[in-house]
Every structure is written in structure tokens, then in C-alpha cells.
Amino acid sequence: MRELKKRCLGRTGLMVTELGLGGFQFTGEFGVPRSTAMDIMDLAFSNGINFVDSAPMYGFGEGEELVGRGTEKACGEIYVSSKVGWLDRTIVRSLGDEAYQDEASIRRVVEHGMRLLGRSYLDILMIHEPEWKQWGLDPDTGNGVVLETLEKLKREGVIGAIGIGGGHLDVMTRLVETDRIDVLLTFMHYDLAVQDAKERLLPAAKKHDVGVILGGPFRQGALAVKQQERIEEMRRTGEYPWGFNDDVVQKIDQIYRLSDETEIPLAEMGIRFLLSDPQVSTVIPGPRKVEELMANLAAARKGPLPQEILDWIHSL
Image 1: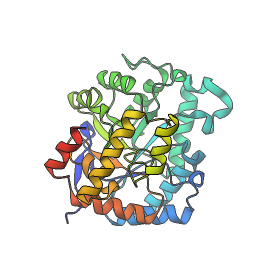
Image 2 (image 1 turned 90 degrees about the vertical axis):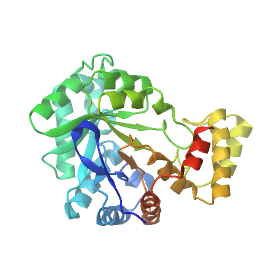
Image 3 (image 1 turned 30 degrees about the horizontal axis):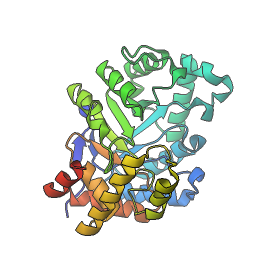
């Protein structure tokens, strides 16, 4: 069984482990005890993981604080990315939507987050949900207060790379095409059941040497463990949560059968499928339990899926 490999995060030059940590679910919002969050990070970093992603809105700041505590204890260099956005869940929420167009407010959120993270320098800072109209961001030029503020922070040596994190493929693609973005994080657009990020977003990222981070690889848990009852309920009622529709549900049915036939656990298949794409720099599941992290590590160490299984998945 191989060790975790490192991949270059696009033009940032950072060599990140192909399995990282998503910090969205570390907090009390998801009922995760603080001790469990610390145990997850301790195990991750002791097993070589060197990349973790967080954001101010994760647990209203608790996510960044926990990541700060976890990385402080780690041996070796840990790369950290965070974001600015969802300002109604941050220290500038009293300003309402005006904060999105105010450089001082954006800087205040960033500085507060860095203090929680225990960092004077942030490897990556992303615009969280860049399609939100509150930003007033022109996706064809990148012009807008938030990107201009991040570029100033980069010139000042406060941050190393500028990223975008969200699920709106068109806006993400157009921003990548401006050549002002170093890293992208997308979710719900590249997993076992859906790969529409490969249509325009990933080709644009390749053209501009933008690093690719994949979050949410398990599609709200439906691709982590088999949830036949949940899937049947969607089909029966015709009521689909965000990220699901009839076509997605049909593909998930086939993925479940493939997992049974190959005897490859569903979550393992999902991670190994994504790591089969050399353009993907790192995949960042958000484990809530130590056991989930251990399974993710074991899956990543097995490497990419065999070509015949990849071909079958791509044929769906």
C-alpha cells in the first residue's frame, strides 16, 4: 500500500497531499465534539496530510479556531486555505450587504480569521461563493472590491494565493479565464455521479495553470454509504434536495450496483475515482469521525481505480 502522494497545486507551486481535510463539519453545528475534531486533525497530520481548508462561516469562527489549534500541534508544514464570504456569519454581520463592497470590512474578516488560525500568513485565501450578487463582482474581468482587496493582500505578503470556492460553474469558469485566480475549489460538480466540472471549468483551469481542489466528494453522504431508502424516497415523491435530480439518482443506483459487484466500498471508490484524474491536486472530504478519516486515508493509499472501472463510470 503506497504512501500519500503530493501533487502540485497549479501555479502556486505548493506540493499538497492528494488527500486533504475539509473543515466544514468540524464544529458544533454538526454535533462534532471539539475533542473529536482535534483527534481527526492529529491523526491526519501524523499520517502525512499537509493541507486543510476552512472558512469564517464554518461554525461562526469555531472552524478556524479549531484548525488553528490543530495545525499548531502538527509536526511539519501544513498548508491552510480559508475564505472570505457569508459575511452574515462573521464579525461584520451588523453592516449587512454593505460589507461586501467595503475593503475595510473584508480586511477585518480576514485578519480576524488569521488570528483564529494562529497565522500571520495565509497560504490561500478564497472568495466564498463568488457568484453572490452582494460582491458586485464582474465574472468576465474579475473587477470588484473583493478581488482587488485580495490582490492587495497578496502584494503585501499577507496571503500567498488567491482562490475561488463555490458551486456556480459558469461564474467560476469565467473568473478562471480572467487569469487573476490561482486556485479553485468546487463541490457537487465532480464525483462518481456527476462530472460536469470537466466540461468547461477544468479545461479553463488547465489552460491557466489553476490548482484544482475538490470538496464534497460524497454528495451529501449519498456516495459515502448506500442510502437506498433515501434515494427511493426522492424517486417516490419527486422531491430532490440541492444537487440531486432524477438523472443523478439513476446514476447513483448504478454506482451502488458497481460497488456491490466489485466489492469496493462506496467511499473508497469515490476517493480513488477522483484521484484517478491527474489534474485534481487534492480531494478534501470532511470527516466527522476518526474512523471516517482512517477509511479515507486507506482509500487514498490504494491509488487510482483500475482503468476498466473508470471506463464503466465514465460511460454512465
